[in-house]
Amino acid sequence: MSELLKNIIRFILFIFVQVFILFKMPPLHRFISPYLYYLYILWLPFSMSRAGLMSVAFFFGLTLDYFMHTPGLHAAACVLIAYLRPFIVNMLISQEGADKNYISPSITSMGWAPYGTYVFILTLFHHGYLVFLEWLSFGSFLYFIGKVIATTGISLLLILLTELLFFRKEKFRTNTV
Amino acid sequence: MRNVFLFIRKYSNFLFFLVLQVLALSFLFRYNNYHQAIFMNAAEEITGSLDQRYSTVEYYFKLKKINEQLTAENLRLHQTFRENYEVAGEGGKLVADTVMMDSLRRIQKYFWMGARVVGSTVSTQTNFITLHRGSDQGVHPNMGVVSPEGIVGTVVNVSENFSSVMTLLHRQYKVVVKLKNGGDRGTVEWEGNPTFVTLRDIPKSAKVQTGDSVVTSPTSSLFPGGIMVGTVLEITDDKSSNFYTLKLKPSTNFFNIEFVYVIANTQYYDQKRLEDSTHKKFQ
Image 1 (cartoon, one colour):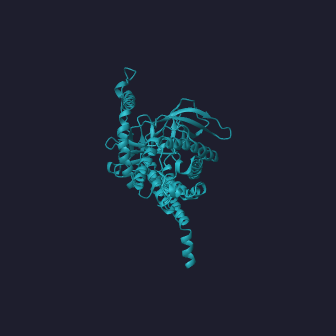
Image 2 (tube, rainbow over the protein chains, first blue to last red):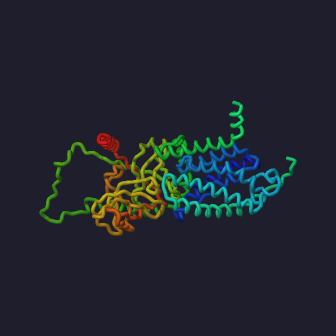
Image 3 (cartoon, each protein chain N blue to C red):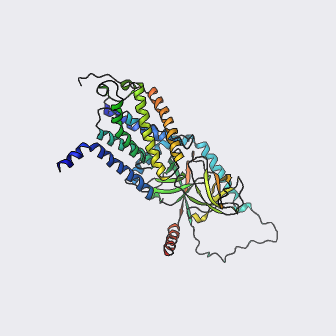
């Protein structure tokens, strides 16, 4: 299956899982909202340009926003993590040229610890910005801190489960590409 | 000039990032102000029809609950039939007092329409539900929405066949209500915890007990009076203020609403216009 087709299917699946499964669940606590959808942006290929990443992230976030009746909220957070993604990937790539030898960030291509750090940092930025935007219209500082921490914890748990259930086998490509 | 182009080329990614951020944030803040966003109506049709497909599956599993709700509502309505009530005294005679009423011209102020819920969110801080009725079926913004159990929210946006309802579980939602016992008015809002809503501005002179019913007040002009809002869970007596802050348990279960009524107040804009012009006059 080509990378493009794979990503289009992922786009639809992530939106549907977020809207029709995760947001349908009765909330556990007001600090906790289960976010998983932005994993799509973390899984986009290394080879995409930064402008490409940001435009895809913008449309992806806006699609979710239209389901949630919050136009712009998730789009803004998605664009932020798409912008920061290349910086963090460059910092964390351990082997020389892993971003040339593998297609997209994953446990196999980056290793457990760097991939975990990559997911953790971007999750924190995503939730921090999202809750900050919410905080502008309501809530208190306690709400901001509590929600960022609790939601980050739940999201990391969900991402771990997703990575274990749908283990992505990344093929090693030679440098001749 | 050359330097300007070089600058743009060098920071093109950052500039593109800023452009997208500004675009997203302008969508967001415009929506909060006017409940109107770019492409929102078109998007509503698409997301609404997807929501509807999903709800046909979900609907089947809720049939039992819906039946119970409707039976309870029927029972309540049966109780109010005039045939159930009898005048106590034999010599009494029921006389309709027609002085206050022009029998030739009665006005129905509220019209009720049934509607099916096709989409809902409950787990966020800004919860909306989507109804399968829109402007083609006569739904407009600023109509009240109630379920068989109690109030749900207000219509804020419509497309041809779907409408969005801002629910009681939305951070910006406010509605005027009153205590059933005593009639003191206050405002209900939500603070983010899905198990209760907060009622403010009830004067301390009011007699309140836990378990008391809170119903809609006709002054809200969205709902007819007397529709259940919730029951008092907890009374907070703040010494520094003259008002109680009450925790209410909402009577509507937002997790399983399937059918609602949309209430059109035929005199809403009439009243609103008068109130606005009065306000302007004495500003």
